[in-house]
Length: 314
Image (tube, rainbow, N blue to C red; front, side, top):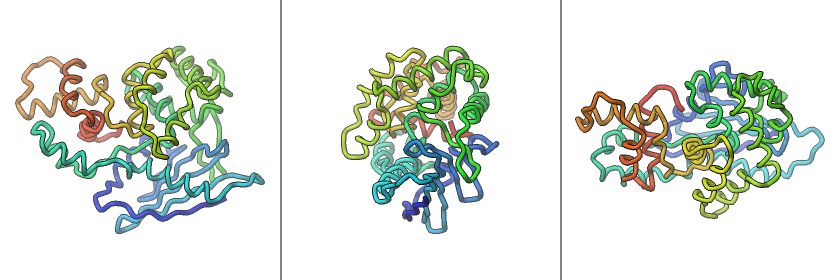
């Protein structure tokens, strides 16, 4: 089953940011980029599906969803509405960039940085579970190592769309794996048990991540503090993991990413260039947290601008 939508993007939409974020793995097993086109394998209502983003001149986007539905009946209009919501979310079109940039213009520390990267939006994962599981995967290892683990996980789950693209697994597919399966993918024992426990909590309804996101799309306030409080009780999930997942999975702009090594490294580069940081020591998480605090409620978006100072998306 194929559904197609057309979306007019803002004049300052930075398509390359979006494409690069979803092109992290050059093996292109679950995401494939072809010039200004992106194909991403996802699970849609427990069915293999392929999201298709086709960017055209004039900031015009054709969006497709190809579902391997077989004989299963699909409610077309409901699916079309959900697809539009997902695309708006993934592209960051519901992020108030103009409001943030007006705020940043009043802060000398970041005024020039934000102006140079005007229009920056934070590309979103296709689901909160994808964002959170990616954050767990990347804990305390290099970006390259995390990408390798992610690739092995996708291959191990083995969900393939009819186009040949692999689909990023959701909680149900993770629960079909064992700890030994995940260890065979090079996950540590702690990360393997954390992923399995997270998937179980989602499946039994204790952590309804997707429902929280849908409620947010439908007008509810995002109860970020409540989400944080529930996730922090999960073994193996700490503050950095939660704040990253809130940003990449829910579009929450006020998490403090002071625990992120790339944020600290680029902040030190920024402040050194501004002659505000003269120490030869690396800037600490505590110093970074204090610096970010003055930018609330936009701390995570400021961190995203610091990420954008480097070539590879996090």
